[in-house]
Length: 321
Ligand SMILES: [Zn+2]
Image (cartoon, rainbow, N blue to C red; front, side, top):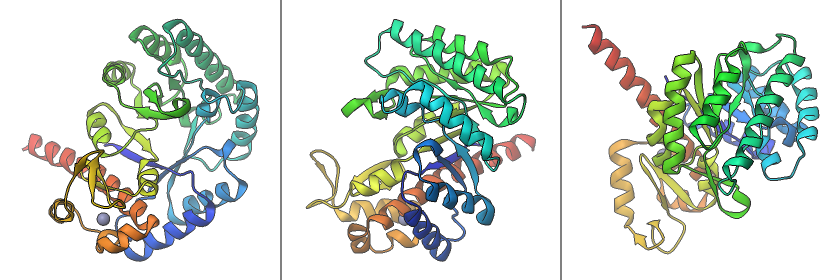
Protein backbone atom coordinates (compact mmCIF):
# COMPACT_ATOMS: atom_id res chain seq x y z
CA UNK A 1 0.00 0.00 0.00
CA UNK A 2 1.49 3.33 -1.05
CA UNK A 3 0.95 6.44 1.09
CA UNK A 4 1.04 10.00 -0.25
CA UNK A 5 2.35 12.67 2.15
CA UNK A 6 1.27 16.16 1.11
CA UNK A 7 4.17 18.54 1.54
CA UNK A 8 3.12 21.92 2.85
CA UNK A 9 5.13 25.11 2.69
CA UNK A 10 2.10 27.35 2.98
CA UNK A 11 1.07 29.62 5.85
CA UNK A 12 -1.08 28.39 8.75
CA UNK A 13 -3.97 30.58 7.51
CA UNK A 14 -3.85 28.91 4.09
CA UNK A 15 -3.65 25.43 5.60
CA UNK A 16 -6.73 26.20 7.69
CA UNK A 17 -8.61 27.58 4.66
CA UNK A 18 -7.74 24.50 2.61
CA UNK A 19 -8.74 22.18 5.45
CA UNK A 20 -12.11 23.92 5.76
CA UNK A 21 -12.77 23.83 2.00
CA UNK A 22 -11.85 20.12 1.81
CA UNK A 23 -14.04 19.26 4.78
CA UNK A 24 -16.96 21.26 3.43
CA UNK A 25 -16.91 20.16 -0.20
CA UNK A 26 -15.01 16.88 -0.39
CA UNK A 27 -15.15 15.32 3.08
CA UNK A 28 -14.78 11.81 1.69
CA UNK A 29 -11.57 12.65 -0.18
CA UNK A 30 -9.48 13.62 2.84
CA UNK A 31 -6.32 14.60 0.99
CA UNK A 32 -4.64 15.86 4.20
CA UNK A 33 -4.54 12.27 5.43
CA UNK A 34 -0.71 12.37 5.56
CA UNK A 35 1.32 15.57 5.93
CA UNK A 36 5.07 16.23 5.76
CA UNK A 37 6.64 19.52 6.82
CA UNK A 38 10.03 20.87 7.84
CA UNK A 39 9.65 22.10 11.43
CA UNK A 40 13.02 23.86 11.62
CA UNK A 41 12.02 26.17 8.76
CA UNK A 42 8.35 26.55 9.68
CA UNK A 43 6.83 29.18 11.96
CA UNK A 44 5.36 28.22 15.32
CA UNK A 45 1.94 29.03 13.82
CA UNK A 46 2.44 26.43 11.08
CA UNK A 47 3.58 23.80 13.58
CA UNK A 48 0.52 24.52 15.73
CA UNK A 49 -1.83 24.27 12.75
CA UNK A 50 -0.32 20.97 11.64
CA UNK A 51 -0.55 19.62 15.17
CA UNK A 52 -4.25 20.53 15.05
CA UNK A 53 -4.65 18.42 11.90
CA UNK A 54 -3.12 15.54 13.83
CA UNK A 55 -5.25 15.99 16.92
CA UNK A 56 -8.57 16.95 15.34
CA UNK A 57 -8.49 15.20 11.98
CA UNK A 58 -6.23 12.27 12.80
CA UNK A 59 -3.71 13.14 10.04
CA UNK A 60 -0.40 11.24 10.04
CA UNK A 61 2.51 13.67 10.37
CA UNK A 62 6.09 13.30 9.13
CA UNK A 63 8.74 15.78 10.31
CA UNK A 64 11.28 16.36 7.54
CA UNK A 65 14.91 16.96 8.45
CA UNK A 66 15.54 20.12 6.44
CA UNK A 67 18.58 18.56 4.73
CA UNK A 68 17.44 20.45 1.62
CA UNK A 69 18.39 23.72 3.33
CA UNK A 70 21.90 22.41 3.97
CA UNK A 71 22.08 21.50 0.28
CA UNK A 72 20.97 25.04 -0.56
CA UNK A 73 23.59 26.41 1.88
CA UNK A 74 20.88 28.24 3.81
CA UNK A 75 21.82 26.33 6.95
CA UNK A 76 25.03 24.70 8.18
CA UNK A 77 24.93 21.07 9.24
CA UNK A 78 25.69 22.16 12.84
CA UNK A 79 22.66 24.49 12.88
CA UNK A 80 20.46 21.79 11.44
CA UNK A 81 21.54 19.20 14.04
CA UNK A 82 21.03 21.62 16.90
CA UNK A 83 17.59 22.88 15.80
CA UNK A 84 16.36 19.43 14.86
CA UNK A 85 17.39 17.89 18.18
CA UNK A 86 15.64 20.64 20.06
CA UNK A 87 12.43 20.25 18.06
CA UNK A 88 12.35 16.44 18.16
CA UNK A 89 12.98 16.40 21.91
CA UNK A 90 10.10 18.69 22.66
CA UNK A 91 7.57 17.50 20.06
CA UNK A 92 6.45 13.98 20.69
CA UNK A 93 3.29 14.22 18.58
CA UNK A 94 4.89 13.27 15.23
CA UNK A 95 4.37 9.90 13.57
CA UNK A 96 7.64 9.92 11.60
CA UNK A 97 10.93 11.76 12.32
CA UNK A 98 13.37 12.07 9.42
CA UNK A 99 17.01 11.89 10.52
CA UNK A 100 19.48 14.62 9.43
CA UNK A 101 20.99 14.26 5.97
CA UNK A 102 23.16 16.01 3.43
CA UNK A 103 21.72 15.62 -0.09
CA UNK A 104 23.99 15.75 -3.16
CA UNK A 105 23.09 17.82 -6.25
CA UNK A 106 23.32 16.69 -9.88
CA UNK A 107 26.53 18.62 -10.51
CA UNK A 108 28.39 16.84 -7.65
CA UNK A 109 31.26 14.53 -8.64
CA UNK A 110 31.24 10.97 -7.28
CA UNK A 111 33.93 12.04 -4.76
CA UNK A 112 31.91 14.99 -3.50
CA UNK A 113 28.83 12.74 -3.25
CA UNK A 114 30.84 10.23 -1.16
CA UNK A 115 31.60 13.05 1.29
CA UNK A 116 27.86 13.73 1.62
CA UNK A 117 27.10 10.02 1.98
CA UNK A 118 29.56 9.66 4.89
CA UNK A 119 28.27 12.85 6.49
CA UNK A 120 24.64 11.68 6.18
CA UNK A 121 25.38 8.27 7.72
CA UNK A 122 27.48 9.75 10.52
CA UNK A 123 24.89 12.39 11.41
CA UNK A 124 21.93 9.99 11.21
CA UNK A 125 23.55 7.39 13.42
CA UNK A 126 24.98 9.70 16.06
CA UNK A 127 21.74 11.73 16.13
CA UNK A 128 19.66 8.60 16.65
CA UNK A 129 22.01 7.41 19.44
CA UNK A 130 21.43 10.63 21.34
CA UNK A 131 17.77 9.66 21.70
CA UNK A 132 18.65 6.43 23.52
CA UNK A 133 16.15 4.22 21.78
CA UNK A 134 13.31 6.77 21.98
CA UNK A 135 11.42 7.18 18.65
CA UNK A 136 13.55 4.39 17.10
CA UNK A 137 10.72 2.90 15.05
CA UNK A 138 9.62 6.38 14.04
CA UNK A 139 13.00 7.51 12.75
CA UNK A 140 13.59 7.56 9.00
CA UNK A 141 17.29 7.58 8.05
CA UNK A 142 17.89 8.93 4.56
CA UNK A 143 19.75 7.07 1.82
CA UNK A 144 21.80 9.51 -0.25
CA UNK A 145 24.00 8.51 -3.15
CA UNK A 146 24.39 8.80 -6.89
CA UNK A 147 26.00 5.37 -7.45
CA UNK A 148 24.88 1.86 -6.46
CA UNK A 149 27.95 1.53 -4.16
CA UNK A 150 26.95 4.66 -2.25
CA UNK A 151 23.35 3.49 -1.91
CA UNK A 152 24.47 0.06 -0.73
CA UNK A 153 26.84 1.64 1.79
CA UNK A 154 23.97 3.68 3.30
CA UNK A 155 21.54 0.78 3.58
CA UNK A 156 24.16 -1.53 5.03
CA UNK A 157 25.15 1.14 7.57
CA UNK A 158 21.52 1.53 8.65
CA UNK A 159 21.02 -2.22 9.08
CA UNK A 160 21.86 -2.05 12.80
CA UNK A 161 19.50 0.86 13.48
CA UNK A 162 16.17 -0.35 14.80
CA UNK A 163 14.12 1.51 12.17
CA UNK A 164 11.14 0.44 10.09
CA UNK A 165 11.36 2.78 7.10
CA UNK A 166 14.23 4.40 5.21
CA UNK A 167 14.00 7.24 2.70
CA UNK A 168 15.61 8.06 -0.64
CA UNK A 169 16.60 11.64 -1.28
CA UNK A 170 19.05 11.64 -4.19
CA UNK A 171 16.89 12.39 -7.18
CA UNK A 172 18.42 14.47 -9.93
CA UNK A 173 18.24 18.20 -9.35
CA UNK A 174 17.73 21.07 -11.76
CA UNK A 175 16.69 24.70 -11.92
CA UNK A 176 18.10 27.69 -10.12
CA UNK A 177 20.39 26.52 -7.27
CA UNK A 178 19.49 22.88 -8.01
CA UNK A 179 16.28 23.48 -6.07
CA UNK A 180 14.00 21.24 -8.17
CA UNK A 181 14.06 17.46 -7.97
CA UNK A 182 13.74 15.71 -11.30
CA UNK A 183 13.24 12.06 -11.94
CA UNK A 184 16.21 11.34 -14.20
CA UNK A 185 16.71 7.93 -15.82
CA UNK A 186 19.66 7.36 -13.52
CA UNK A 187 17.85 8.29 -10.31
CA UNK A 188 14.97 6.01 -11.30
CA UNK A 189 17.47 3.15 -11.79
CA UNK A 190 18.97 3.93 -8.38
CA UNK A 191 15.52 3.92 -6.80
CA UNK A 192 14.76 0.57 -8.43
CA UNK A 193 18.03 -0.86 -7.07
CA UNK A 194 17.36 0.58 -3.60
CA UNK A 195 13.85 -0.87 -3.62
CA UNK A 196 15.23 -4.42 -4.02
CA UNK A 197 17.90 -3.76 -1.40
CA UNK A 198 15.36 -2.35 1.09
CA UNK A 199 13.22 -5.48 0.69
CA UNK A 200 16.25 -7.67 1.38
CA UNK A 201 16.97 -5.78 4.57
CA UNK A 202 13.30 -5.66 5.60
CA UNK A 203 12.92 -1.88 5.35
CA UNK A 204 9.96 0.05 3.97
CA UNK A 205 10.91 2.81 1.53
CA UNK A 206 9.91 6.47 1.29
CA UNK A 207 10.77 8.70 -1.70
CA UNK A 208 11.35 12.38 -0.90
CA UNK A 209 10.23 15.29 -3.08
CA UNK A 210 8.45 13.72 -6.07
CA UNK A 211 7.00 15.89 -8.86
CA UNK A 212 3.64 15.68 -10.64
CA UNK A 213 1.38 12.85 -11.86
CA UNK A 214 3.73 11.34 -14.45
CA UNK A 215 6.64 11.00 -11.97
CA UNK A 216 4.33 9.54 -9.36
CA UNK A 217 3.13 6.88 -11.78
CA UNK A 218 6.73 5.94 -12.66
CA UNK A 219 7.83 5.24 -9.08
CA UNK A 220 4.72 3.51 -7.76
CA UNK A 221 6.02 -0.05 -7.83
CA UNK A 222 9.23 0.72 -5.95
CA UNK A 223 8.02 2.53 -2.83
CA UNK A 224 5.79 2.38 0.25
CA UNK A 225 5.36 6.14 0.57
CA UNK A 226 6.34 9.39 -1.12
CA UNK A 227 5.87 13.09 -0.59
CA UNK A 228 5.18 15.85 -3.03
CA UNK A 229 4.63 19.58 -2.91
CA UNK A 230 3.90 19.82 -6.63
CA UNK A 231 0.10 19.86 -6.13
CA UNK A 232 0.39 23.35 -4.63
CA UNK A 233 3.37 24.61 -6.65
CA UNK A 234 1.59 23.61 -9.88
CA UNK A 235 -1.54 25.42 -8.68
CA UNK A 236 0.57 28.55 -8.26
CA UNK A 237 1.91 28.24 -11.81
CA UNK A 238 -1.64 27.98 -13.16
CA UNK A 239 -1.35 24.24 -13.81
CA UNK A 240 -3.95 21.57 -13.15
CA UNK A 241 -3.30 17.84 -12.89
CA UNK A 242 -5.03 15.33 -15.09
CA UNK A 243 -4.60 11.71 -13.98
CA UNK A 244 -1.31 11.30 -15.87
CA UNK A 245 -0.20 14.80 -16.91
CA UNK A 246 -0.47 18.48 -16.09
CA UNK A 247 -1.99 21.27 -18.16
CA UNK A 248 -1.57 25.01 -17.84
CA UNK A 249 -4.95 26.73 -17.93
CA UNK A 250 -4.19 30.32 -17.02
CA UNK A 251 -2.57 31.33 -20.34
CA UNK A 252 -4.37 32.32 -23.56
CA UNK A 253 -5.13 28.71 -24.37
CA UNK A 254 -4.58 25.52 -22.32
CA UNK A 255 -1.20 23.90 -23.01
CA UNK A 256 0.56 20.72 -21.90
CA UNK A 257 4.07 22.05 -22.46
CA UNK A 258 5.75 24.97 -24.19
CA UNK A 259 4.20 24.77 -27.65
CA UNK A 260 1.69 22.00 -27.16
CA UNK A 261 -1.71 23.67 -27.03
CA UNK A 262 -4.88 21.71 -26.38
CA UNK A 263 -8.51 22.79 -26.25
CA UNK A 264 -10.67 23.06 -23.13
CA UNK A 265 -12.65 20.04 -24.38
CA UNK A 266 -9.49 17.95 -24.13
CA UNK A 267 -9.15 18.72 -20.42
CA UNK A 268 -12.77 18.20 -19.64
CA UNK A 269 -13.07 14.94 -21.55
CA UNK A 270 -10.04 13.59 -19.72
CA UNK A 271 -11.31 14.75 -16.36
CA UNK A 272 -14.92 13.71 -16.85
CA UNK A 273 -13.90 10.16 -17.68
CA UNK A 274 -11.56 9.74 -14.76
CA UNK A 275 -12.32 12.22 -12.02
CA UNK A 276 -14.84 14.50 -10.42
CA UNK A 277 -14.39 17.00 -7.62
CA UNK A 278 -16.03 20.19 -6.40
CA UNK A 279 -13.00 22.35 -7.19
CA UNK A 280 -12.84 21.56 -10.92
CA UNK A 281 -16.58 21.60 -11.52
CA UNK A 282 -16.27 25.08 -13.06
CA UNK A 283 -13.36 25.72 -15.40
CA UNK A 284 -13.83 29.46 -14.98
CA UNK A 285 -13.48 29.19 -11.24
CA UNK A 286 -10.46 26.92 -11.67
CA UNK A 287 -8.79 29.50 -13.92
CA UNK A 288 -9.42 32.30 -11.45
CA UNK A 289 -8.86 30.59 -8.11
CA UNK A 290 -5.37 29.42 -7.19
CA UNK A 291 -6.50 27.55 -4.12
CA UNK A 292 -9.10 25.61 -6.13
CA UNK A 293 -6.33 24.51 -8.53
CA UNK A 294 -4.18 23.33 -5.63
CA UNK A 295 -7.07 21.49 -4.01
CA UNK A 296 -8.09 19.85 -7.29
CA UNK A 297 -4.43 18.81 -7.75
CA UNK A 298 -4.10 17.33 -4.26
CA UNK A 299 -7.35 15.41 -4.75
CA UNK A 300 -6.12 13.99 -8.08
CA UNK A 301 -2.88 12.83 -6.36
CA UNK A 302 -4.84 11.38 -3.45
CA UNK A 303 -7.22 9.57 -5.82
CA UNK A 304 -4.35 8.15 -7.89
CA UNK A 305 -2.84 6.58 -4.78
CA UNK A 306 -6.20 5.28 -3.51
CA UNK A 307 -6.77 3.71 -6.93
CA UNK A 308 -3.43 1.83 -6.61
CA UNK A 309 -4.50 0.59 -3.18
CA UNK A 310 -7.78 -0.70 -4.67
CA UNK A 311 -5.87 -2.39 -7.52
CA UNK A 312 -3.60 -4.14 -4.99
CA UNK A 313 -6.55 -5.29 -2.86
CA UNK A 314 -8.28 -6.58 -5.99
CA UNK A 315 -5.11 -8.44 -7.03
CA UNK A 316 -4.85 -10.08 -3.62
CA UNK A 317 -8.51 -11.11 -3.72
CA UNK A 318 -8.16 -12.57 -7.22
CA UNK A 319 -5.01 -14.46 -6.22
CA UNK A 320 -6.77 -15.98 -3.22
CA UNK A 321 -9.58 -17.38 -5.39
ZN1 LIG B 1 -11.06 18.05 -9.58
